[in-house]
Amino acid sequence: MKRKNLMILAEKELLEASRNRLVLGFGAVFFVLALTLSIIGFISPGAEDVQFSRVGVSLLNLVALLVPLIALLLGSQGFAGEFEDGTMELLLTQPVGLAEICLGRIMGQWAALAAALLAGFGGSGLVLMLLSSDRRVLPFLVNLGTALSLALIFLILGSLVSLQSKNRLSALFTALALWFGMVILYDILVVQVLMISSGSTSMILLYVLMVLNPSDLLRILAIRLTDLKELFGPTTEAMAALPGFQAPAAAVLVWLAWVLGLYWAVVRTLYHRVYKVAHAAKAILAAK
Image (cartoon, rainbow, N blue to C red; front, side, top):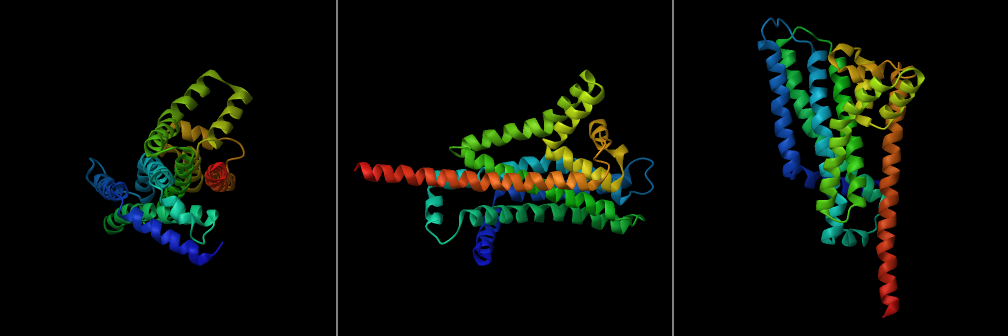
């Protein structure tokens, strides 16, 4: 993998993503909402001071809803759009590898989303620095890190959806369905599992459900690093109490497995899709 090729591809994707109305709209909305959450903390009745940790967790709850949606939509339109428009064939004629194409695309798109997140957290942090007496910024930074991690993993998942889809429209509906299932319906499913199961069965099911959903996995990581259980919902709090996930290292390892596994799946899927088209073209030429 050549570093020069990788940086050129990443720069190209960053430039395209920075012009994308979806990314620009998300950046503007998140910046406004982040500032609003910080200011509301001071104007609320009875509020004398606002802590970095509490505002950071409030932002993380907002991120857990919006970032998976934006990352899935952005990632899902990449490969599907290029195959549909025919520009992928042009890119494949250049001296770049498939792994470089995948990693460069993901890096560029993630950098664009990271800039939007940094703007929102940075604006909120500036307000807190000016108005709050609390200087414990570590929980705030931890929540920023988990937000960036969430953006990365759902962006890779969106790229996989894009490669599995025939066109942009199919990729769009698949991405929306994934977001609805993993972000909206997931907690409802966990609550139902807790209600109908007990003992070791309940614990095993909770382990499985947590590992299968990176969104709640990263919430658990934030809980373990900030120790602010009361600010999250009962579902996430129950998962954080599972034996084996009392230490952040376990959640980090599972997140890393998600990232590496999804990236490997993206590269393999691109490989099969490219060479499937190549073999079909050879077959047509041979028939002539």
